[in-house]
Image (tube, rainbow, N blue to C red; front, side):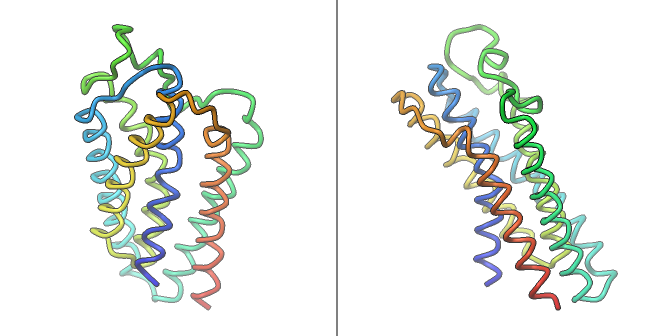
Length: 194
């Protein structure tokens, strides 16, 4: 069951990456594999650091309370994300830079040096969830690797669909899907801790 929870957390953390990849692709911006790999490594590293911090805190409190706090944090992040998505659904994300801002030389190729800030903007989305997972005692290496790997493949898949001009509502619905998934993970973690 722990590995299933790790997979769900990785998916929730990567849905935004898929939407970003698709939106870049639709605008004709191609993300190089080395730039995508850099973003995946940043996501892996920030998730690992955050989940280890959560794990250290989790060791100081009883297991049932750690699971309860973990579930509450993940549920809170999911509810906040859903609330924010509902409030700001008509405006572009303020935390994720847009494709034209990233492609500074306007050559339609997003290179390694152009993805630095985008990498951290995307990885910040997973930090709160990773912290909650750490408190709940999930495997830090497993969570970090899952987040990193799914980050790479979700951006790549989104970009491929976007470059084919496959107009999908997935980009619009990604925040809702990630939020609902986090809410479900949080509720499940709370109930299993009791």
